[in-house]
Image (cartoon, rainbow, N blue to C red; front, side):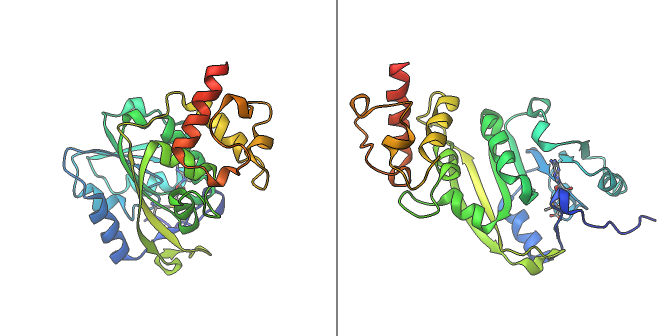
Length: 253
Ligand code: SAM
């Protein structure tokens, strides 16, 4: 018999126990039998088991070796267990387009989102549980206090929709904060041509929130080189204006 798993903080382990919430998440994903589905951080299988009922094949990537034996004990032929770090997982090993799902470890949710951003060409869509505050930041409109680098980077490449909020009591152990389900779908017509350069401009623009763009972009662009008003702060610019800044920067280099 398997002994009860003790949740590990360093792996961001908060296991879903609320059946109603699990049902709602699976209904949101609405998996089809032939979907190429990847679950990040399956844990003890709270979402994995109901997902396995829907699809011909489910790939999971889990870092904690102790949880692998729990997943193996399900003895499900359509479950493909990968042990390792989701940040290093090679999406080329899966049939495309991939639908990525998961109740993400909150301590590394942003690096996972950036890893998937780099691989967005292989992704059909993503349905994730994240800290509610992170979902709010991802979907924040320009001009709001929480609009920042993560909002611009994600909105430049994905359609973003917050689906529903999940309270701490739905997990064991309960996290200290609310969580939320977010749906992300790669944009077919993102205006960004060079992700690396775009990222460089966005990062520099938000490097000192209280300073103007003129200050933050000092070593990259002057007012003569762009029509975007550099006396503004980064948080007032929408995604298209960041694209303009990037194009103007690239023209000089
Ligand atoms: N899906 C399960 C559930 O909802 O009950 C577990 C969710 S728990 C918030 C996050 C899971 O991600 C844990 O199982 C944890 O071990 C795993 N994890 C943490 N860091 C990881 C990484 N770098 N790569 C893959 N899995 C990771």
